[in-house]
Image (cartoon, rainbow, N blue to C red; front, side, top):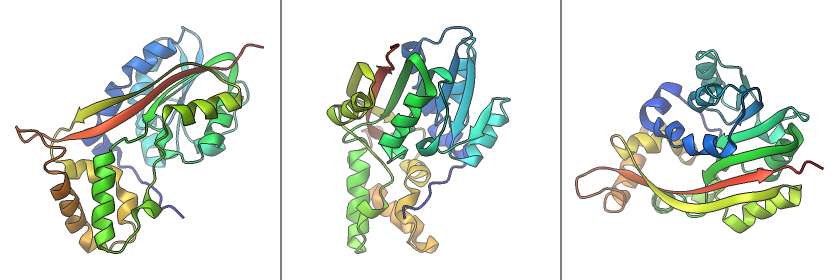
Length: 252
Protein backbone atom coordinates (compact mmCIF):
# COMPACT_ATOMS: atom_id res chain seq x y z
CA UNK A 1 0.00 0.00 0.00
CA UNK A 2 1.26 3.47 -0.89
CA UNK A 3 2.31 5.43 2.20
CA UNK A 4 -0.09 8.27 2.94
CA UNK A 5 1.10 11.80 2.20
CA UNK A 6 0.68 14.15 5.14
CA UNK A 7 0.57 17.92 5.01
CA UNK A 8 1.70 20.65 7.38
CA UNK A 9 -0.28 23.77 6.37
CA UNK A 10 2.28 26.17 7.85
CA UNK A 11 5.19 24.58 6.00
CA UNK A 12 3.09 24.33 2.85
CA UNK A 13 2.32 28.05 2.98
CA UNK A 14 5.98 28.82 3.64
CA UNK A 15 7.57 26.62 0.98
CA UNK A 16 4.80 26.11 -1.58
CA UNK A 17 2.68 29.24 -1.31
CA UNK A 18 3.37 29.87 -4.98
CA UNK A 19 0.99 27.03 -5.89
CA UNK A 20 -2.18 29.05 -5.25
CA UNK A 21 -0.83 32.15 -6.99
CA UNK A 22 -0.16 30.09 -10.10
CA UNK A 23 -3.83 29.07 -10.15
CA UNK A 24 -5.19 32.51 -11.05
CA UNK A 25 -5.36 31.62 -14.76
CA UNK A 26 -7.58 28.65 -13.94
CA UNK A 27 -10.15 30.92 -12.33
CA UNK A 28 -10.18 33.03 -15.48
CA UNK A 29 -10.67 29.89 -17.56
CA UNK A 30 -13.51 28.68 -15.33
CA UNK A 31 -15.07 32.17 -15.42
CA UNK A 32 -17.42 31.58 -12.47
CA UNK A 33 -20.53 33.73 -12.57
CA UNK A 34 -21.95 35.41 -9.50
CA UNK A 35 -24.31 33.01 -7.76
CA UNK A 36 -22.91 29.84 -9.33
CA UNK A 37 -21.87 26.92 -7.14
CA UNK A 38 -18.30 25.68 -7.59
CA UNK A 39 -16.38 22.73 -6.18
CA UNK A 40 -12.72 23.38 -5.34
CA UNK A 41 -11.29 19.87 -5.65
CA UNK A 42 -8.07 19.45 -3.69
CA UNK A 43 -8.33 22.87 -2.08
CA UNK A 44 -5.30 22.64 0.20
CA UNK A 45 -5.34 25.47 2.72
CA UNK A 46 -8.06 27.35 0.83
CA UNK A 47 -5.95 30.16 -0.63
CA UNK A 48 -7.42 29.69 -4.11
CA UNK A 49 -10.89 29.08 -2.67
CA UNK A 50 -10.85 32.61 -1.28
CA UNK A 51 -10.15 33.96 -4.76
CA UNK A 52 -13.11 32.01 -6.14
CA UNK A 53 -15.36 33.43 -3.43
CA UNK A 54 -14.31 36.94 -4.37
CA UNK A 55 -16.04 36.34 -7.71
CA UNK A 56 -19.38 36.08 -5.93
CA UNK A 57 -19.90 32.36 -6.38
CA UNK A 58 -20.66 29.77 -3.73
CA UNK A 59 -17.74 27.39 -3.13
CA UNK A 60 -17.41 24.03 -1.44
CA UNK A 61 -13.75 23.24 -0.77
CA UNK A 62 -12.70 19.60 -0.38
CA UNK A 63 -9.39 17.89 0.33
CA UNK A 64 -8.34 14.51 1.69
CA UNK A 65 -6.03 16.15 4.24
CA UNK A 66 -7.67 16.91 7.58
CA UNK A 67 -4.81 19.28 8.38
CA UNK A 68 -5.30 21.31 5.21
CA UNK A 69 -9.07 21.39 5.71
CA UNK A 70 -8.54 22.72 9.24
CA UNK A 71 -6.43 25.51 7.74
CA UNK A 72 -9.13 26.22 5.15
CA UNK A 73 -11.84 26.23 7.82
CA UNK A 74 -9.76 28.75 9.79
CA UNK A 75 -10.31 31.07 6.81
CA UNK A 76 -14.07 30.69 7.43
CA UNK A 77 -14.49 28.62 4.26
CA UNK A 78 -17.02 25.85 3.67
CA UNK A 79 -14.41 23.08 3.71
CA UNK A 80 -14.80 19.33 4.12
CA UNK A 81 -12.49 16.33 4.33
CA UNK A 82 -13.39 14.29 1.25
CA UNK A 83 -11.47 11.69 -0.74
CA UNK A 84 -11.99 12.82 -4.35
CA UNK A 85 -11.60 9.24 -5.57
CA UNK A 86 -14.81 8.39 -3.69
CA UNK A 87 -16.81 11.64 -3.71
CA UNK A 88 -20.54 11.35 -4.20
CA UNK A 89 -22.21 14.57 -5.33
CA UNK A 90 -25.21 14.59 -7.64
CA UNK A 91 -25.57 17.48 -10.13
CA UNK A 92 -24.61 19.97 -7.42
CA UNK A 93 -22.18 22.30 -9.21
CA UNK A 94 -21.89 24.50 -12.27
CA UNK A 95 -18.13 24.25 -12.12
CA UNK A 96 -15.33 22.13 -10.71
CA UNK A 97 -11.85 23.60 -10.35
CA UNK A 98 -8.72 21.69 -9.38
CA UNK A 99 -5.24 23.15 -9.08
CA UNK A 100 -2.11 21.05 -8.46
CA UNK A 101 -4.07 18.20 -6.90
CA UNK A 102 -5.16 15.69 -9.54
CA UNK A 103 -1.67 14.21 -9.94
CA UNK A 104 -1.87 12.99 -6.34
CA UNK A 105 -4.92 10.86 -7.26
CA UNK A 106 -3.84 7.70 -9.04
CA UNK A 107 -7.42 6.44 -9.46
CA UNK A 108 -7.98 9.13 -12.08
CA UNK A 109 -10.94 7.39 -13.67
CA UNK A 110 -12.80 7.37 -10.36
CA UNK A 111 -12.07 11.08 -9.87
CA UNK A 112 -13.32 11.99 -13.35
CA UNK A 113 -16.46 9.89 -12.84
CA UNK A 114 -17.12 11.72 -9.56
CA UNK A 115 -16.65 15.09 -11.24
CA UNK A 116 -19.03 14.09 -14.04
CA UNK A 117 -21.74 13.15 -11.54
CA UNK A 118 -21.11 16.28 -9.47
CA UNK A 119 -21.58 18.64 -12.42
CA UNK A 120 -24.88 19.89 -13.71
CA UNK A 121 -25.52 19.75 -17.49
CA UNK A 122 -23.24 22.24 -19.30
CA UNK A 123 -20.97 22.31 -16.24
CA UNK A 124 -17.26 23.08 -16.61
CA UNK A 125 -14.31 21.09 -15.31
CA UNK A 126 -11.12 23.16 -15.25
CA UNK A 127 -7.87 21.83 -13.90
CA UNK A 128 -4.11 21.94 -13.87
CA UNK A 129 -1.90 19.08 -12.77
CA UNK A 130 1.54 17.66 -13.27
CA UNK A 131 1.94 16.30 -16.79
CA UNK A 132 4.33 13.80 -18.32
CA UNK A 133 7.96 14.48 -17.26
CA UNK A 134 6.84 16.79 -14.46
CA UNK A 135 9.69 17.16 -11.92
CA UNK A 136 11.59 14.54 -13.92
CA UNK A 137 14.94 15.61 -12.50
CA UNK A 138 13.63 15.03 -8.98
CA UNK A 139 12.17 11.64 -9.89
CA UNK A 140 15.45 10.60 -11.51
CA UNK A 141 17.51 11.73 -8.52
CA UNK A 142 15.26 10.01 -5.99
CA UNK A 143 15.26 6.85 -8.10
CA UNK A 144 19.08 6.81 -8.23
CA UNK A 145 19.59 7.39 -4.50
CA UNK A 146 16.99 4.80 -3.51
CA UNK A 147 18.41 2.38 -6.08
CA UNK A 148 21.78 2.62 -4.36
CA UNK A 149 19.97 1.38 -1.24
CA UNK A 150 18.37 -1.48 -3.17
CA UNK A 151 14.94 0.18 -3.08
CA UNK A 152 12.61 0.37 -6.09
CA UNK A 153 11.43 4.00 -6.12
CA UNK A 154 8.50 3.17 -8.41
CA UNK A 155 6.83 1.31 -5.55
CA UNK A 156 6.76 4.55 -3.52
CA UNK A 157 5.93 7.02 -6.29
CA UNK A 158 2.66 8.78 -5.31
CA UNK A 159 2.13 10.68 -8.57
CA UNK A 160 0.17 10.34 -11.80
CA UNK A 161 1.67 12.50 -14.56
CA UNK A 162 -0.25 11.81 -17.79
CA UNK A 163 0.38 13.10 -21.29
CA UNK A 164 -2.24 15.03 -23.24
CA UNK A 165 -3.56 12.05 -25.19
CA UNK A 166 -4.01 9.85 -22.12
CA UNK A 167 -5.88 12.44 -20.08
CA UNK A 168 -7.99 13.58 -23.03
CA UNK A 169 -9.07 9.97 -23.53
CA UNK A 170 -10.06 9.63 -19.87
CA UNK A 171 -12.20 12.75 -20.10
CA UNK A 172 -13.78 11.89 -23.43
CA UNK A 173 -14.48 8.28 -22.42
CA UNK A 174 -16.47 9.71 -19.52
CA UNK A 175 -18.49 11.87 -21.92
CA UNK A 176 -16.76 15.23 -21.51
CA UNK A 177 -16.11 17.53 -24.45
CA UNK A 178 -12.53 18.76 -24.15
CA UNK A 179 -12.51 22.45 -25.03
CA UNK A 180 -8.87 23.12 -24.20
CA UNK A 181 -5.80 21.12 -23.23
CA UNK A 182 -2.15 22.16 -23.07
CA UNK A 183 1.03 20.55 -21.80
CA UNK A 184 3.73 23.12 -21.06
CA UNK A 185 6.99 23.47 -19.11
CA UNK A 186 6.97 25.88 -16.19
CA UNK A 187 10.31 25.96 -14.37
CA UNK A 188 9.36 27.41 -11.00
CA UNK A 189 11.74 29.23 -8.65
CA UNK A 190 11.84 28.19 -5.01
CA UNK A 191 12.20 30.50 -2.06
CA UNK A 192 15.11 28.86 -0.31
CA UNK A 193 16.78 25.45 -0.24
CA UNK A 194 15.30 22.65 -2.35
CA UNK A 195 15.48 20.37 0.70
CA UNK A 196 12.40 22.16 2.11
CA UNK A 197 10.51 21.31 -1.08
CA UNK A 198 11.73 17.71 -1.01
CA UNK A 199 10.63 17.21 2.59
CA UNK A 200 7.21 18.59 1.76
CA UNK A 201 6.50 16.63 -1.42
CA UNK A 202 8.55 13.41 -1.40
CA UNK A 203 7.57 11.93 1.95
CA UNK A 204 6.38 8.62 0.53
CA UNK A 205 9.86 7.74 -0.73
CA UNK A 206 11.32 7.75 2.80
CA UNK A 207 8.45 5.82 4.37
CA UNK A 208 10.56 2.70 4.91
CA UNK A 209 13.84 4.48 5.64
CA UNK A 210 14.84 4.95 9.27
CA UNK A 211 14.03 8.49 10.38
CA UNK A 212 17.63 8.98 11.47
CA UNK A 213 18.63 8.49 7.82
CA UNK A 214 16.17 10.96 6.29
CA UNK A 215 18.55 13.93 6.37
CA UNK A 216 21.24 11.89 4.64
CA UNK A 217 18.78 10.82 1.96
CA UNK A 218 17.63 14.38 1.26
CA UNK A 219 21.21 15.63 1.21
CA UNK A 220 22.13 12.97 -1.34
CA UNK A 221 19.17 13.89 -3.56
CA UNK A 222 20.07 17.57 -3.27
CA UNK A 223 23.63 16.80 -4.35
CA UNK A 224 22.30 15.03 -7.45
CA UNK A 225 20.20 18.08 -8.35
CA UNK A 226 22.84 20.73 -7.62
CA UNK A 227 23.97 21.15 -11.23
CA UNK A 228 20.49 20.63 -12.72
CA UNK A 229 18.03 22.69 -10.70
CA UNK A 230 20.26 25.46 -9.38
CA UNK A 231 21.07 28.54 -11.45
CA UNK A 232 24.35 30.47 -11.66
CA UNK A 233 23.25 32.74 -8.81
CA UNK A 234 22.66 29.81 -6.49
CA UNK A 235 18.85 29.95 -6.68
CA UNK A 236 16.88 26.71 -6.74
CA UNK A 237 13.98 25.94 -9.08
CA UNK A 238 11.87 22.88 -9.88
CA UNK A 239 11.30 21.56 -13.40
CA UNK A 240 7.51 21.58 -13.40
CA UNK A 241 5.61 20.48 -16.50
CA UNK A 242 1.92 21.25 -16.26
CA UNK A 243 -1.14 19.82 -17.97
CA UNK A 244 -3.98 22.36 -18.11
CA UNK A 245 -7.46 21.64 -19.44
CA UNK A 246 -11.06 22.72 -19.70
CA UNK A 247 -13.78 20.11 -20.27
CA UNK A 248 -17.53 20.54 -20.60
CA UNK A 249 -20.31 18.20 -19.57
CA UNK A 250 -22.80 18.41 -22.46
CA UNK A 251 -26.13 20.09 -21.79
CA UNK A 252 -28.13 17.28 -23.39
